[in-house]
Length: 113
Length: 115
Image 1 (tube, each protein chain N blue to C red):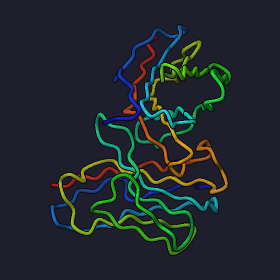
Image 2 (image 1 turned 30 degrees about the vertical axis):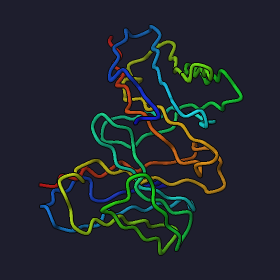
Image 3 (image 1 turned 45 degrees about the vertical axis):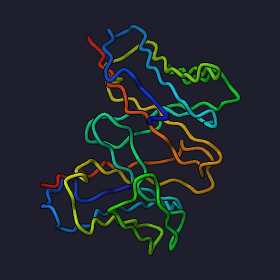
């Protein structure tokens, strides 16, 4: 049973528009959430994170929103650029799990020119 | 600064063969880990180490062995490869003192095919 779910395997967005990637989780003990970005033939790289004491965190074009009651988080990219085309992974950790990460399956974002 | 390096990049094995996936980091990180990534699934933790001489199992440890004799190296051993171990393997490292995973650095991955 997947504790972190990314239900959209892929997403296509026009360059310059907003990209919204979604992630749902089931474990209420998760208290920290991260987004990683992965290009082909490379390892994932950290993008942005959010603690459960916040509902929003912003870093440049990237904003992550957390809705604890719905167990849902989303990553907004505004404006979307061609270099944003990649696979985006949502991951979560709980303090009582030795901080091990539980990963979603990823969403492939394609930015169209 | 090389970061996290993995060798080989790609490997084909026959069922029953053994091999070692190499991982090295030059950032003096205490914490190192191995993940596998399968189609339609997220990364899953195989084994991890919090320092030289200390290793522990992750979510999917069966069929894999690890050792940590130095801070820099964390090899992953497949003693008798099975087709179910066909996957992409990522090694990662981070500073043990970091509560949060932002400082986790990944290698480029090893693609393994077991026939």
